[in-house]
Every structure is written in C-alpha cells, then in structure tokens.
Length: 128
Ligand SMILES: [Zn+2]
Image 1: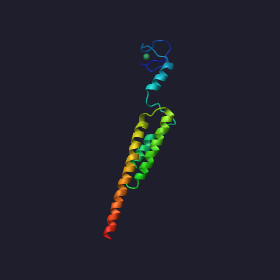
Image 2: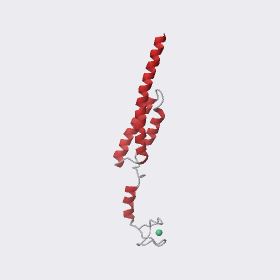
Image 3: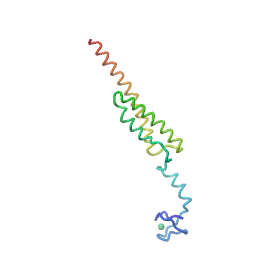
Image 4: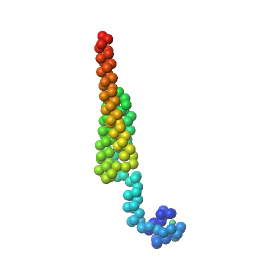
C-alpha cells in the first residue's frame, strides 16, 4: 500500500504517519500513466529539436532549403513518435506544429527568393 499524502509505502489501510487512507500501489501506476503527459517512450525521437533547426533556417536565402529538410524530418519524427506512443503529446506535439511551420515557411520563402532573384537577374540583363 502507498500513502498519497506522504509518498511512502505503508502496510495497512491507513498511513501510520498522517492517518490518510492508503491506496494500492497496483492501482496507482495505471492512473498515473493515463493522466501523465511526460511518460513518453524512452526511445521517442526528439521532434522539437528538428523543428527548431527547421525554424532557424527556413527564413534565410538558400538556407531555407535546410528549413524544408529539417521541417520534413520533424514531421517524420512526429509520425515515429505517434506510432511509438499511440498519440502525440508534450514537446513532440509542439515540435510537430513548429515543424509544419518551418516546412511551409521554407517553401514559401524559396518561392519568394526565386522570384526575387529572377527579377534582379532580369533587371541586370535589361541594363546591359
Ligand atoms: Zn501519510
């Protein structure tokens, strides 16, 4: 048996220290697992790390290609996390959102920079 109040393992229905009703240790584990958000599988990939890398690169010319790549890795790591843990939660959930943002921003910036360089190239050519 286990006292929720003191956090100690005790024998009997009542805690000898504080007098609280004790709970069965076997009943504590499943409720903690279902309500806890930090109980990710130890082999879970770090989605957030890749997403942050993606965000760091996605806004820069040429480097935004890396933003797309890291964003795509974050997306695949999020799928890996989901298949490993059954659902996505905690920092992995944040990582999936940020990874999607990095991926989309990376693509949008690639298009913008491409148009930008084409305009500059055309302008240079027209002045020659
Ligand atoms: Zn107690």
